Amino acid sequence: MSQALSTDILIVGGGIAGLWLNARLRRLGYATLLVENDRLGGGQSVKSQGIIHGGTKYALSGALTGSSEAIADMPRRWREALAGSGELDLSGVRLLSEAHYLWSPGTLAGNLTSFFASKAMRGRVDQVKGAELPPALQHPKFKGKVYRLAELVLDVPSLIARLAELGGDGLLAGERIAPLREDGELVGLRVDGREIRARRIVLSAGQGNADLLNTLGIEQPKQQLRPLHMVLVKAPTLKPLYAHCLGGGPKPRVTVTSHPTADGQWVWYLGGDLAEADGVARDEAAQIKAAQKELGELLPWVDLSAAQWRTLRVDRAEPAQSGLVRPDNAFLSEQGPLLVGWPTKLALAPDFADRVIATLEREAVQPGNCPALPELPRPTVARPLWEELFA
Ligand code: FAD
Image (cartoon, rainbow, N blue to C red; front, side):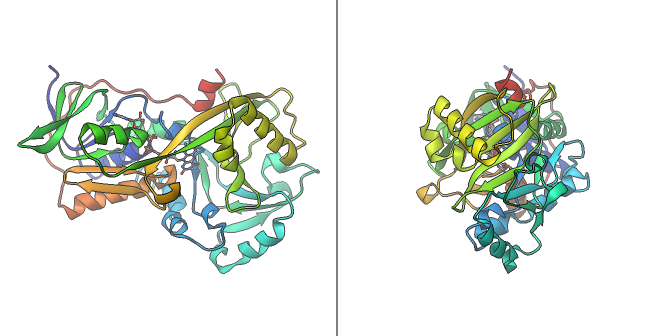
């Protein structure tokens, strides 16, 4: 029988939400233990596009929504962390791009100009031209307008690796989770048979939260899954591009991010409307055709004759909303010693941690005197998606 453990805060799930929270709590002096049943970051986090949204995309419908306001401070917080002067020291994490761009391929430009000149958007976007354009758009045939957003794009695998480092000795590979109760009260979890007592338990297991709640016999909160069918293209001719290409509606027609591979090429990772409902309904071959058509129309000068194509089906896990709409903030629900949540976006991991910390402060859960942890089986860190898919 493995040695019983005790900690202040037991976290289940090592995606961005759990890892960020774990690192923040440790910095505040709490004893923490994070349990991961697969690879750290290997759920949605390493499949994300790494954009640290500031809300501009969500303001495209014209008015700033709750979403835009809640998220507006995230780029600053991440920027400070990346500089080593913020709430976490992420100074070694690779920044892929200082900016994300909004790119309007044609006739929409008129509408956009007045939208971007509006009071709500002033200071958040700047038009760029000529040599300031993203490398992939610097071509004589390029038409349209491009606006620079003050939103970062991160290399998520290096972010996960850094947060795993900040997790110190408190990361545990564990598969079977069961409640640990005393007098009917939840006092911890049993992980692969090992008793782990904790003052608070945080479920941040992404899509895994639903099963964990079920195991604990808890019905709320409900989870929603939003399926996506993403496309990846790798070619020696690709240059970096980080942009939402706008279509007629409030959602980007395609969102492109670019990821360097170990063999010195770039992979474009394509999401946006392409990956949503119609894209989800297409099979892999049809989805690749749809992506080829989009890129052929939007960037006809890019030679894709030697390109390799892949698709990836992945669900976004979120708290249930009516009509599957996108939630506005990180979400946290409290049920006695159990806290359950979803950050809803990679960018909102700091907001998720804030919510947990606010709960601990409100309930006067201070760092305690927990015994040092023994050496524990440690989960591995997920490999970059593009290395896995193009191996
Ligand atoms: P996850 O990353 O899914 O992590 C959950 C972890 O819990 C996993 O490691 C899993 O193995 C583990 N786990 C599950 N069950 C158990 C269990 N029983 N016991 C132990 N561990 C368990 N957001 C942005 O801000 N910017 C973007 O550009 C962006 N792009 C995206 C692109 C795509 C294609 C997708 C799918 C999402 C994107 N997102 C983006 C959203 C973002 O990726 C997610 O909101 C975020 O990664 C969720 O983090 P998480 O830690 O809650 O979940």
